[in-house]
Every structure is written in structure tokens, then in C-alpha cells.
Length: 220
Image (cartoon, rainbow, N blue to C red; front, top):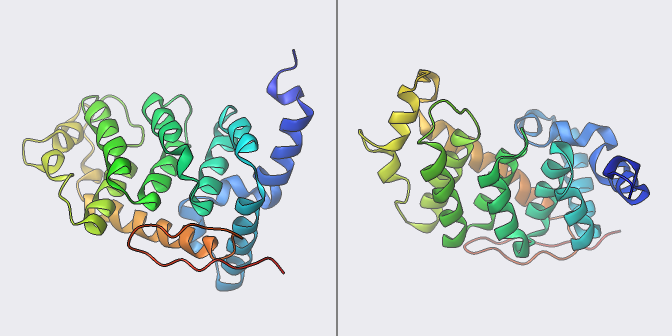
């Protein structure tokens, strides 16, 4: 049986969705530094690809490496494919590869329901107890705070209490004083969700998320 890298379908999917313009590197903080024209082109192409890729093809990418998983998570986010919620929650908790976890957090923050908050809280419950591990704790905290602001909840409060798990994680060892301002992660996550919303405007069929209006556009 061929490995993923020897599979013609896998190679086609990577060339089609992952590597054009080094997309996998731009999904995340880099996309927020794009110029107006670059951003418009990038969100257009991302939205159209999110509408084109099939659920089975997304599953193939999610079974691959970090580049493929990161890209698949963003395509899932933009197309609002909430049927992948539990799968992404499992991948986030498993933390099998680097770089992809923060993208799962963007997906859950964009989906924007209590079920997504549950998955983020489960991750924080597990990994804030491991100060020796620097994984996606800041992204997950930012996503949970973002959801609290949207849902009118206070799920993050128990983690952020003076004796809570967040401060225990920061205290280490090793110490992580540069992570002492969780609101900065909420702001960054909100910006990434806005970027995903902008891309969704170019997706052929996008369900309207709770508490938000997203206009879908037909391809021209």
C-alpha cells in the first residue's frame, strides 16, 4: 500500500489546496499582515477553494502532516463545515503535530457555539496542567475568551482566577511571563475569525453562524 506521499490523490490535493502561493504558511498570524490587494486575492481564493473541496478530501488532508491539517482546518472554518467539529476537537486534544493546533482553535472560535467552548475548555483543562509543555494553550485561551464575549458566558474565568490553571501554567517551570496578558490572545483570535468571515463571503454556500451575518457569493 502506498504511503500518503506516494498517493496520487494526496499529491493532487496538496498541489490544489495546500501549497499554491505557500498558502499553508500564510494561514494564521501572517494573513493579518497582508496588504489590501493581497488580502482581497487571498480571501477570494481561500473562500472559493473552501467551497470546492469535498468532505472526503478534507478527511484525507486531516490524516496527513501539519501543513495539510492546518490548511484543512482553515478550509473547514471558511465553509462552516461543522460536521468536523468533533474531529478537530479530537485532533486538538491529541496534539500529534506542531503548528496545526492553533488553526483548530480558530475553527472552533468561528463555529461559535457552546459545544465548541466545551472542546476548548477540555483542552485547557488537560494542557494547562502541563507547564512543561508549550503547545496551543495561548490560542485555546484566546478562542475561549472570544467565545465568552460572543456567547455572553464566562467559561474562561475559572482558568484565569489568581490560583487558576492559567497562572499555574505560566508559573512553570519553565516560567512564561510573556503569556501573562490573555486578552491579547482574544484580540488576535477575533481578528483571525474576522479574516475567516471575509473569506466565507467568497464561498459558494455558507451557513449563517450564530449571532453573525455572512453573505455568500456565487462564483463568477
